[in-house]
Figure 1 (cartoon, rainbow, N blue to C red):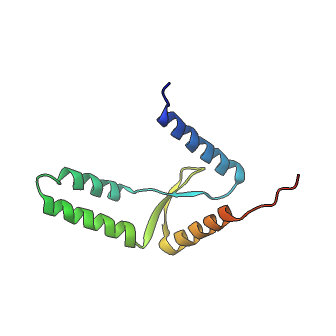
Figure 2 (cartoon, rainbow, N blue to C red; figure 1 turned 120 degrees about the vertical axis):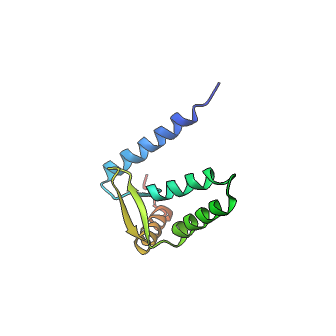
Figure 3 (cartoon, one colour; figure 1 turned 45 degrees about the vertical axis):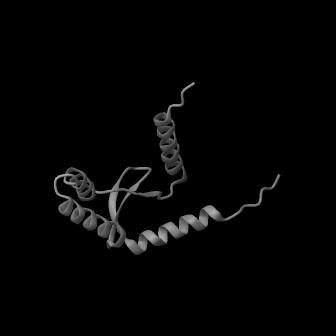
Length: 108
């Protein structure tokens, strides 16, 4: 018996998208923009011939990822992509974490 991992991941993404559509809430997910993808590709392409230049690309990419002012996010329900400030993103993540960690009393 084999397990289809890609199919399972696709079903999970579809379930997340349906939950976001039906709940009418903004559900954001951090993604990489084209510049970040190019930096990663150039890092791996130049890794063997010129280690120094590829290291510079890795440093620039990590600075942009960890200390950048804006974060590229995607709305799960509508697949809209846009930039938000780092402070807004941290507030959103803290709100989502507190919402997921609160306990609810079940009345049977």
